[in-house]
Each structure stands twice: as C-alpha cells, then as structure tokens.
Image (cartoon, rainbow, N blue to C red; front, side, top):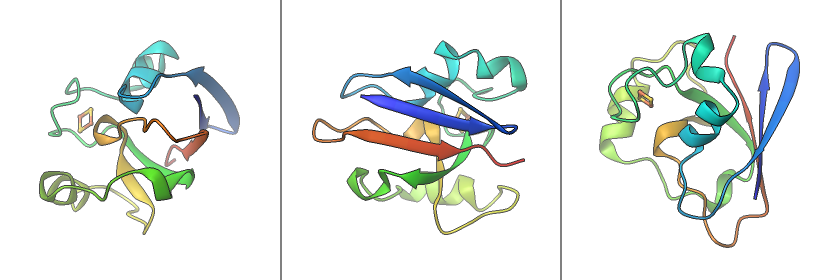
Amino acid sequence: MKVTFKIQGTEKSVELNPGERLLKGIYKLGLDELGMGECGGNCVCCTCHVYVVEGADKFPPASEEEETMLDTAFNLQANSRLACQLVVQPDQEAVTVQVPE
Ligand code: FES
C-alpha cells in the first residue's frame, strides 16, 4: 500500500504492508533525519505528528494515550494523528499525510 508524506513542499512515497506502522515509512524515507519519530514509536514525543488527508476513515480512532500526546502538539487539527500509532489496514488502498510545518 502506498503511503505519501507531503513535507516541505515535496511528496515522498513509500510502500508499506498491512500491519506496519506509518512510522516505518518515516524511517524508510529518512524523515527521521528531519527530527521525526524521535521516541521510536513509544507515543511520548509527538515528532511524528501528521495530518491525514487521504485514507483517514480506515484507521481506528486514536487511543486515549495518542489523544493525550496529541494535546501537546503544535497546530493541532481535526485530522491530526501520530504516525507511530497508525497501522496500515488490510483494506486500505492509499494514505496521504501532510507533515505540519
Ligand atoms: S514517534 Fe514519538 S510519538 Fe510517535
């Protein structure tokens, strides 16, 4: 399944399998070099904050833990999620996320 990250005016795409977290896409694309995914997916850093612009309906709702962490995010929006908490679903066709400025 194709996951596209829109970041700093560009788009970077990566293939992920069902069961894999979007955080893996961050690492595969080298976005961790820009400071994303600092806590390694432990839901304690918020550096994987993204806006889900396509495919959001397939993801389960955010857990209480994710919601609590998101409350500390800058520029929180209705479609804000933490990439480390988003697991690719078997019936998902594509996901596009925008990385906040
Ligand atoms: S990688 Fe730290 S909260 Fe997602």
